[in-house]
Image (tube, rainbow, N blue to C red; front, side, top):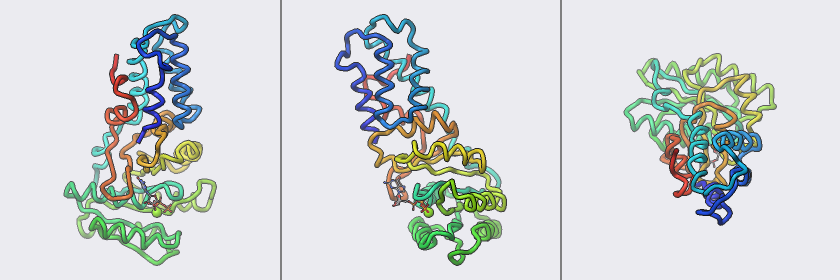
Length: 297
Ligand SMILES: Nc1nc2c(ncn2[C@@H]2O[C@H](COP(=O)(O)OP(=O)(O)OP(=O)(O)O)[C@@H](O)[C@H]2O)c(=O)[nH]1
Ligand SMILES: [Mg+2]
Protein backbone atom coordinates (compact mmCIF):
# COMPACT_ATOMS: atom_id res chain seq x y z
CA UNK A 1 0.00 0.00 0.00
CA UNK A 2 1.35 3.44 -0.92
CA UNK A 3 4.72 2.06 -1.95
CA UNK A 4 4.62 4.25 -5.02
CA UNK A 5 3.90 7.47 -3.19
CA UNK A 6 6.40 6.74 -0.43
CA UNK A 7 9.04 5.77 -2.97
CA UNK A 8 8.51 8.96 -4.97
CA UNK A 9 8.64 11.09 -1.83
CA UNK A 10 11.89 9.34 -0.85
CA UNK A 11 13.43 10.63 -4.04
CA UNK A 12 12.34 14.23 -3.60
CA UNK A 13 15.82 15.63 -3.22
CA UNK A 14 17.19 13.82 -6.23
CA UNK A 15 20.07 12.31 -4.24
CA UNK A 16 20.89 15.67 -2.69
CA UNK A 17 19.48 14.88 0.73
CA UNK A 18 21.51 16.79 3.31
CA UNK A 19 22.72 19.30 0.70
CA UNK A 20 21.12 22.50 -0.52
CA UNK A 21 18.48 22.90 -3.22
CA UNK A 22 16.14 25.64 -4.36
CA UNK A 23 12.61 25.76 -2.98
CA UNK A 24 11.24 25.91 -6.52
CA UNK A 25 13.08 22.71 -7.38
CA UNK A 26 11.64 20.99 -4.32
CA UNK A 27 8.08 22.07 -5.18
CA UNK A 28 8.52 20.87 -8.76
CA UNK A 29 9.79 17.52 -7.48
CA UNK A 30 6.78 17.16 -5.20
CA UNK A 31 4.44 18.01 -8.08
CA UNK A 32 6.00 15.33 -10.26
CA UNK A 33 6.00 12.79 -7.44
CA UNK A 34 2.28 13.38 -6.97
CA UNK A 35 1.47 12.98 -10.64
CA UNK A 36 3.57 9.82 -10.89
CA UNK A 37 1.68 8.42 -7.91
CA UNK A 38 -1.63 8.83 -9.67
CA UNK A 39 -2.80 11.98 -7.93
CA UNK A 40 -5.09 13.85 -10.34
CA UNK A 41 -3.72 16.88 -12.14
CA UNK A 42 -6.09 19.23 -10.35
CA UNK A 43 -5.20 17.82 -6.94
CA UNK A 44 -1.45 17.84 -7.65
CA UNK A 45 -1.71 21.50 -8.61
CA UNK A 46 -3.64 22.36 -5.47
CA UNK A 47 -1.23 20.52 -3.21
CA UNK A 48 1.84 22.09 -4.85
CA UNK A 49 0.29 25.50 -4.58
CA UNK A 50 -0.44 25.00 -0.86
CA UNK A 51 3.14 23.81 -0.38
CA UNK A 52 4.45 26.78 -2.28
CA UNK A 53 2.80 29.14 0.22
CA UNK A 54 4.83 27.58 3.01
CA UNK A 55 8.16 28.11 1.26
CA UNK A 56 9.32 31.71 1.05
CA UNK A 57 12.19 32.79 -1.16
CA UNK A 58 12.03 29.87 -3.53
CA UNK A 59 15.01 30.93 -5.62
CA UNK A 60 17.41 30.69 -2.72
CA UNK A 61 19.27 27.42 -2.18
CA UNK A 62 18.50 25.99 1.25
CA UNK A 63 19.33 22.80 3.13
CA UNK A 64 16.92 20.01 2.20
CA UNK A 65 16.11 19.65 5.89
CA UNK A 66 14.32 22.99 5.85
CA UNK A 67 11.69 21.76 3.37
CA UNK A 68 10.71 18.56 5.07
CA UNK A 69 8.20 19.81 7.62
CA UNK A 70 6.43 21.95 5.03
CA UNK A 71 5.59 18.85 2.99
CA UNK A 72 4.30 17.01 6.05
CA UNK A 73 2.16 19.98 7.04
CA UNK A 74 0.76 20.37 3.53
CA UNK A 75 -0.21 16.71 3.19
CA UNK A 76 -1.72 16.76 6.67
CA UNK A 77 -3.76 19.83 5.77
CA UNK A 78 -5.34 17.93 2.87
CA UNK A 79 -5.93 14.76 4.89
CA UNK A 80 -7.53 16.81 7.66
CA UNK A 81 -10.20 18.01 5.24
CA UNK A 82 -11.50 14.44 4.99
CA UNK A 83 -10.99 13.55 8.66
CA UNK A 84 -14.03 11.69 9.92
CA UNK A 85 -15.62 11.14 13.30
CA UNK A 86 -16.66 7.78 11.98
CA UNK A 87 -18.32 6.38 15.06
CA UNK A 88 -20.23 9.62 15.69
CA UNK A 89 -21.44 9.59 12.11
CA UNK A 90 -22.98 6.18 12.76
CA UNK A 91 -25.02 7.35 15.75
CA UNK A 92 -28.68 8.36 15.63
CA UNK A 93 -32.25 7.17 15.89
CA UNK A 94 -32.88 3.47 15.69
CA UNK A 95 -33.14 1.88 13.21
CA UNK A 96 -30.29 3.85 11.71
CA UNK A 97 -30.43 3.51 7.95
CA UNK A 98 -27.26 3.52 5.88
CA UNK A 99 -27.50 3.68 2.10
CA UNK A 100 -24.49 2.53 0.08
CA UNK A 101 -24.05 4.01 -3.38
CA UNK A 102 -21.38 3.86 -6.04
CA UNK A 103 -20.66 2.85 -9.58
CA UNK A 104 -20.23 -0.74 -10.74
CA UNK A 105 -17.85 -3.00 -8.94
CA UNK A 106 -16.44 -0.49 -6.49
CA UNK A 107 -16.95 -2.88 -3.59
CA UNK A 108 -20.32 -1.88 -2.10
CA UNK A 109 -21.54 -5.38 -1.36
CA UNK A 110 -18.22 -6.53 0.11
CA UNK A 111 -18.00 -3.37 2.18
CA UNK A 112 -21.48 -3.86 3.62
CA UNK A 113 -20.34 -7.18 5.10
CA UNK A 114 -17.34 -5.39 6.60
CA UNK A 115 -19.50 -2.67 8.14
CA UNK A 116 -21.96 -5.27 9.41
CA UNK A 117 -19.08 -7.01 11.15
CA UNK A 118 -17.75 -3.71 12.49
CA UNK A 119 -21.16 -2.99 14.04
CA UNK A 120 -21.95 -6.46 15.40
CA UNK A 121 -18.53 -6.53 17.06
CA UNK A 122 -19.67 -3.42 18.89
CA UNK A 123 -22.82 -5.23 20.03
CA UNK A 124 -25.15 -3.54 17.56
CA UNK A 125 -27.90 -5.51 15.81
CA UNK A 126 -27.86 -5.27 12.04
CA UNK A 127 -30.00 -6.24 9.06
CA UNK A 128 -29.07 -5.94 5.39
CA UNK A 129 -31.45 -4.96 2.56
CA UNK A 130 -30.66 -6.70 -0.75
CA UNK A 131 -31.76 -3.70 -2.81
CA UNK A 132 -29.55 -4.60 -5.76
CA UNK A 133 -32.30 -6.45 -7.59
CA UNK A 134 -30.82 -5.40 -10.91
CA UNK A 135 -27.64 -7.40 -11.48
CA UNK A 136 -27.95 -11.17 -11.93
CA UNK A 137 -26.40 -12.90 -8.94
CA UNK A 138 -26.42 -9.84 -6.71
CA UNK A 139 -28.97 -11.25 -4.28
CA UNK A 140 -26.99 -14.49 -3.88
CA UNK A 141 -23.82 -12.50 -3.36
CA UNK A 142 -25.20 -10.31 -0.58
CA UNK A 143 -26.87 -13.38 1.00
CA UNK A 144 -23.49 -15.10 1.09
CA UNK A 145 -21.85 -12.01 2.57
CA UNK A 146 -24.58 -11.76 5.21
CA UNK A 147 -24.08 -15.40 6.17
CA UNK A 148 -20.37 -14.85 6.45
CA UNK A 149 -20.84 -12.23 9.13
CA UNK A 150 -23.96 -13.73 10.73
CA UNK A 151 -26.37 -10.98 9.66
CA UNK A 152 -29.86 -11.50 8.22
CA UNK A 153 -30.49 -10.34 4.66
CA UNK A 154 -33.97 -9.18 3.61
CA UNK A 155 -34.55 -10.02 -0.06
CA UNK A 156 -37.16 -10.15 -2.79
CA UNK A 157 -37.14 -11.64 -6.29
CA UNK A 158 -34.57 -10.45 -8.86
CA UNK A 159 -36.00 -7.55 -10.82
CA UNK A 160 -38.29 -6.40 -8.03
CA UNK A 161 -38.49 -2.83 -6.75
CA UNK A 162 -35.30 -1.98 -4.78
CA UNK A 163 -37.15 0.59 -2.67
CA UNK A 164 -39.69 -2.03 -1.59
CA UNK A 165 -36.89 -4.31 -0.37
CA UNK A 166 -35.34 -1.47 1.63
CA UNK A 167 -38.76 -0.58 3.04
CA UNK A 168 -39.29 -4.20 4.18
CA UNK A 169 -35.87 -4.30 5.82
CA UNK A 170 -36.65 -1.11 7.72
CA UNK A 171 -40.01 -2.52 8.89
CA UNK A 172 -38.23 -5.71 9.93
CA UNK A 173 -35.73 -3.68 11.95
CA UNK A 174 -38.46 -1.60 13.59
CA UNK A 175 -40.48 -4.62 14.67
CA UNK A 176 -37.45 -6.39 16.14
CA UNK A 177 -35.52 -3.54 17.70
CA UNK A 178 -32.64 -3.84 15.25
CA UNK A 179 -30.21 -0.92 15.38
CA UNK A 180 -28.91 -0.67 11.81
CA UNK A 181 -30.25 -1.27 8.30
CA UNK A 182 -27.52 -1.46 5.66
CA UNK A 183 -28.93 -0.99 2.18
CA UNK A 184 -27.01 -2.49 -0.76
CA UNK A 185 -27.77 -0.96 -4.15
CA UNK A 186 -27.00 -1.82 -7.76
CA UNK A 187 -23.78 -0.42 -9.16
CA UNK A 188 -24.46 1.89 -12.01
CA UNK A 189 -22.85 4.22 -14.41
CA UNK A 190 -23.59 7.80 -13.58
CA UNK A 191 -24.57 8.58 -17.16
CA UNK A 192 -27.55 6.27 -16.95
CA UNK A 193 -30.40 8.60 -16.16
CA UNK A 194 -33.02 5.95 -15.36
CA UNK A 195 -30.80 4.28 -12.84
CA UNK A 196 -29.92 7.59 -11.31
CA UNK A 197 -33.61 8.38 -10.94
CA UNK A 198 -34.09 5.01 -9.30
CA UNK A 199 -31.34 5.84 -6.84
CA UNK A 200 -33.05 9.10 -5.97
CA UNK A 201 -36.22 7.13 -5.40
CA UNK A 202 -34.51 4.73 -2.98
CA UNK A 203 -33.17 7.70 -1.12
CA UNK A 204 -36.59 9.32 -0.99
CA UNK A 205 -38.38 6.20 0.16
CA UNK A 206 -35.85 5.16 2.80
CA UNK A 207 -34.72 8.62 3.95
CA UNK A 208 -31.36 7.24 5.12
CA UNK A 209 -29.61 8.67 8.18
CA UNK A 210 -26.35 8.29 6.33
CA UNK A 211 -25.50 7.91 2.65
CA UNK A 212 -22.08 6.52 1.85
CA UNK A 213 -20.35 6.72 -1.51
CA UNK A 214 -18.06 3.76 -2.13
CA UNK A 215 -15.08 4.59 -4.35
CA UNK A 216 -12.55 2.15 -5.80
CA UNK A 217 -9.11 3.64 -5.14
CA UNK A 218 -7.78 2.32 -8.44
CA UNK A 219 -10.42 4.21 -10.39
CA UNK A 220 -10.61 7.29 -8.18
CA UNK A 221 -9.24 9.72 -10.75
CA UNK A 222 -11.60 8.52 -13.44
CA UNK A 223 -14.67 8.95 -11.31
CA UNK A 224 -14.04 12.37 -9.81
CA UNK A 225 -16.36 14.18 -12.22
CA UNK A 226 -19.02 11.54 -11.76
CA UNK A 227 -18.66 11.71 -8.01
CA UNK A 228 -19.16 15.45 -8.08
CA UNK A 229 -22.31 15.05 -10.18
CA UNK A 230 -23.43 12.43 -7.77
CA UNK A 231 -22.81 14.75 -4.87
CA UNK A 232 -24.91 17.45 -6.48
CA UNK A 233 -27.79 15.30 -7.60
CA UNK A 234 -28.16 12.66 -4.93
CA UNK A 235 -25.89 13.75 -2.12
CA UNK A 236 -23.75 11.71 0.21
CA UNK A 237 -22.37 12.22 3.70
CA UNK A 238 -19.27 10.10 3.80
CA UNK A 239 -16.91 8.07 1.68
CA UNK A 240 -15.40 4.61 1.86
CA UNK A 241 -12.36 4.04 -0.32
CA UNK A 242 -11.87 0.38 -1.25
CA UNK A 243 -9.05 -1.77 -2.66
CA UNK A 244 -6.23 0.24 -1.16
CA UNK A 245 -4.37 -3.06 -0.88
CA UNK A 246 -4.17 -3.32 -4.66
CA UNK A 247 -3.35 0.34 -5.23
CA UNK A 248 0.43 0.38 -5.55
CA UNK A 249 0.76 4.02 -6.48
CA UNK A 250 -1.41 5.32 -3.67
CA UNK A 251 -2.41 8.78 -4.84
CA UNK A 252 -6.18 8.28 -4.78
CA UNK A 253 -6.68 9.39 -1.19
CA UNK A 254 -5.09 12.74 -1.95
CA UNK A 255 -7.22 13.16 -5.06
CA UNK A 256 -10.36 12.43 -3.07
CA UNK A 257 -9.25 14.68 -0.22
CA UNK A 258 -8.57 17.53 -2.58
CA UNK A 259 -11.63 17.18 -4.78
CA UNK A 260 -14.54 15.74 -2.82
CA UNK A 261 -14.07 17.21 0.65
CA UNK A 262 -16.38 14.76 2.40
CA UNK A 263 -15.24 12.64 5.35
CA UNK A 264 -13.52 9.39 4.50
CA UNK A 265 -14.98 7.02 7.06
CA UNK A 266 -13.21 3.77 6.29
CA UNK A 267 -10.77 2.26 3.87
CA UNK A 268 -11.00 -1.24 2.46
CA UNK A 269 -7.83 -3.28 2.40
CA UNK A 270 -8.92 -6.68 1.09
CA UNK A 271 -11.77 -8.99 0.19
CA UNK A 272 -12.54 -10.34 3.66
CA UNK A 273 -14.93 -8.92 6.26
CA UNK A 274 -11.97 -8.04 8.48
CA UNK A 275 -10.22 -5.96 5.86
CA UNK A 276 -11.53 -2.60 6.97
CA UNK A 277 -9.69 0.24 8.70
CA UNK A 278 -11.16 3.40 10.19
CA UNK A 279 -9.66 6.29 8.29
CA UNK A 280 -7.25 8.46 10.23
CA UNK A 281 -5.01 11.17 8.77
CA UNK A 282 -2.25 10.22 11.23
CA UNK A 283 -2.27 6.59 10.13
CA UNK A 284 -2.45 7.59 6.51
CA UNK A 285 0.45 10.01 6.54
CA UNK A 286 2.65 7.37 8.17
CA UNK A 287 2.00 5.19 5.13
CA UNK A 288 2.44 7.96 2.60
CA UNK A 289 5.65 9.60 3.72
CA UNK A 290 9.03 7.97 4.25
CA UNK A 291 10.30 8.00 7.80
CA UNK A 292 12.67 10.93 7.45
CA UNK A 293 9.77 13.14 6.35
CA UNK A 294 7.53 12.27 9.29
CA UNK A 295 7.58 15.48 11.22
CA UNK A 296 5.63 18.68 11.43
CA UNK A 297 6.92 22.22 11.80
N1 LIG B 1 -8.46 -6.39 -2.98
C1 LIG B 1 -9.66 -5.91 -2.64
N2 LIG B 1 -10.76 -6.30 -3.30
C2 LIG B 1 -11.95 -5.79 -2.94
C3 LIG B 1 -12.07 -4.84 -1.89
N3 LIG B 1 -13.39 -4.51 -1.78
C4 LIG B 1 -14.04 -5.23 -2.74
N4 LIG B 1 -13.19 -6.00 -3.44
C5 LIG B 1 -13.48 -6.91 -4.56
O1 LIG B 1 -14.00 -6.15 -5.64
C6 LIG B 1 -14.94 -6.92 -6.38
C7 LIG B 1 -16.25 -6.16 -6.49
O2 LIG B 1 -16.80 -6.06 -5.19
P1 LIG B 1 -18.35 -5.96 -4.90
O3 LIG B 1 -18.53 -5.85 -3.43
O4 LIG B 1 -19.09 -7.00 -5.62
O5 LIG B 1 -18.63 -4.56 -5.59
P2 LIG B 1 -20.04 -3.86 -5.83
O6 LIG B 1 -19.81 -2.40 -5.78
O7 LIG B 1 -21.06 -4.40 -4.93
O8 LIG B 1 -20.31 -4.30 -7.34
P3 LIG B 1 -21.72 -4.16 -8.15
O9 LIG B 1 -22.79 -4.61 -7.24
O10 LIG B 1 -21.54 -5.01 -9.34
O11 LIG B 1 -21.80 -2.73 -8.50
C8 LIG B 1 -15.05 -8.24 -5.65
O12 LIG B 1 -14.22 -9.17 -6.28
C9 LIG B 1 -14.54 -7.93 -4.24
O13 LIG B 1 -14.00 -9.04 -3.59
C10 LIG B 1 -10.86 -4.41 -1.21
O14 LIG B 1 -10.85 -3.57 -0.30
N5 LIG B 1 -9.70 -4.97 -1.64
MG1 LIG C 1 -22.91 -5.18 -5.31
